Length: 200
View 1 (tube, rainbow, N blue to C red):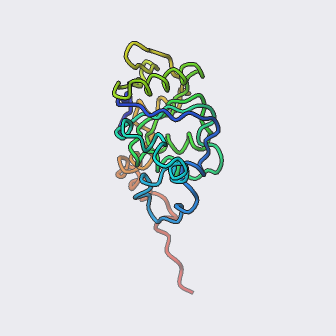
View 2: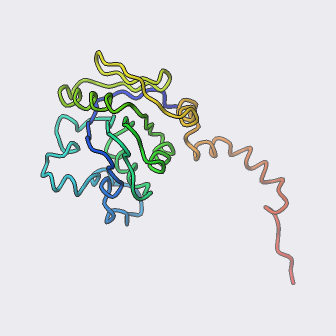
View 3: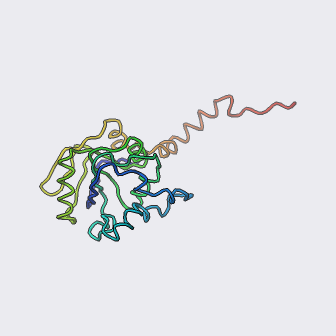
């Protein structure tokens, strides 16, 4: 199990409310068999329209690990490809005013914290990142803070998901693998697991 207590790195500001999953990863990319390569296509249509001016194309943000957004980020369809595309681009945590519930749940399942801040803090962080893109941010899930230089602000996340990150229990597959011996022992005592079809 892998705990997630802090995420530190450069930030990427992405202003705008109600940015939906159709924009995050357009539908034509959902035909992939695996999630490999999705990071290259994140915000593909927005980036094409803005001809290199989109934040995900800007040179100062190319190694960013924390994405700072606004209200209702990840709304729309429930495609898990959206958080996959964002994380495969390089983002390890999201800070925003609010997140769509299914998008948030998909991020938790991948070990990517989504914490909320006030509208003022989100705007301040976005402006400060734009002014000083090399200045690192630190998200601290133990103390529920985000810091950037002299700025320190509170963040919020429900206690259940927070404990999953801090305790490392966000990884459902990892938990199953770590309990393989106990699962096999339980299965061996279930009468229907070794059930054999009677001959006619």
